[in-house]
Image (cartoon, rainbow, N blue to C red; front, side, top):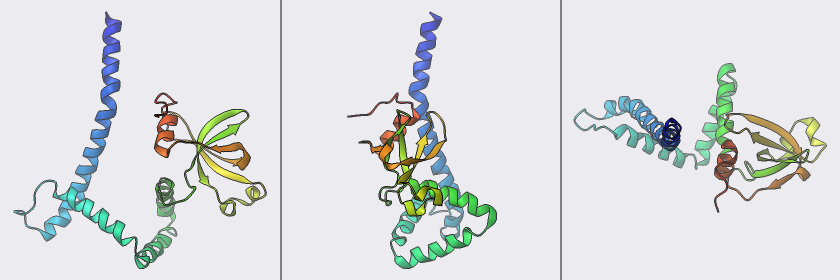
Length: 194
């Protein structure tokens, strides 16, 4: 009897945990946005006009406007200049560049970047993501071979390996980045949806 109760509780836990974590993350983002924008809004608006949720709306509007501005060449050049300054500050450059590179990896604007591939390593096939396809940007020792830099994530962990693989040992997979990441991070439990 206790075994069946334990299985029922575990099933309920496994069912609810992803929903709760997703809702909590969205709640945290909304509260953080509200708290950050409320100060700026109170400088501009009176307390009678302000209503709860206005900070979230203002945050979304700011993100949208920044996205629009980044389409302008002048704004991109100014932003690039600001980034070059950040890249010279000792501690900030390490943190900022790492975060920037991570978001660039998932950015749809880079062609061939983050392409899902299967990698043949000693007869084993692993799913990975191309992080550097341009041999001109690879270290000197890698330029002599026709190689590609591939990130191979580990299941159930935040981490993985970045390996230099000969181009002949990788094959493109018919999976989106979302499908592949979900497949790898859950150790294939989710499977590929048709």
